[in-house]
Image (tube, rainbow, N blue to C red; front, side, top):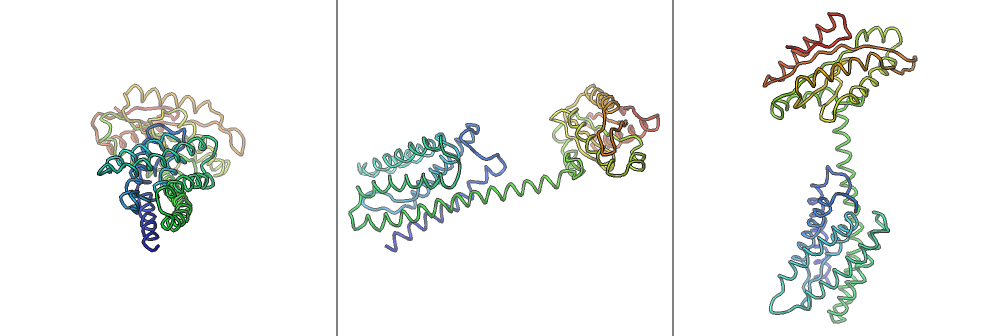
Length: 356
């Protein structure tokens, strides 16, 4: 009995360790569901199949069959990835199990096929109707206990069947609940890390990129893009807005301008608050004519845009300075854009100058 318990406990330890490791490729991806992209579901199936094989390598051999907790990773695969993940995991497991047949002893392999098919088929059909919850996994575990219990009853003498089956039931339910909780906690942890990273790179007031993220993006420009541009945007007479209406109204203007700049820019551009009332637009792989077109479009849009604030509707203008790079160091590009912005403000404001 102690040997049986030790074998299942070893399976559980291996299972939790492998789940933690195999979760890492999915940590920055959206939660997998049966409607997720096919590539992700196949990858989940491959990982679950490999986990099941490692459990098989550490299985308890009795009467020509291998007894382990393979049902848990396969059930998890179906729970998150649907029938595609479950089928891939089952095929990988059975293919390797077939290669393990020696001396024509096919009974264990046939029982493995029956148990895997008897598990994957019904739980895949149930997954179409049930959500991704712990209760659903417990339903899957009940099916696996029934299927594997029938196999064990057929293959083992009664004096072995009862202790093995009792231990299997306890370990299967306990392992399934613990594995589900482990995956949920891992997902929650990595989502919290992502959230904290996002906060560290996001301007608290406007919700767009902050100075830190902008600096990181500029540091990579010379490596990732031979041709790029930087546009600096500065609100004209912003101090007058703060002095007249208060800083809360000034914050409203900054928020709305940030959203307007994002809306006018393309997805490949990075828009951020560079400091105070100054914004920066990073344009990787941009032609010179694209820079002028975007800057003029922003200038005209802002000049006619009604900024809704707590003090009512305000109208503002912006000045813009930009520099287009052809293998120029990013520090020089930023400096030229800043000089162009300075000249735009000195020459009357509400205008755009592209540094030559």
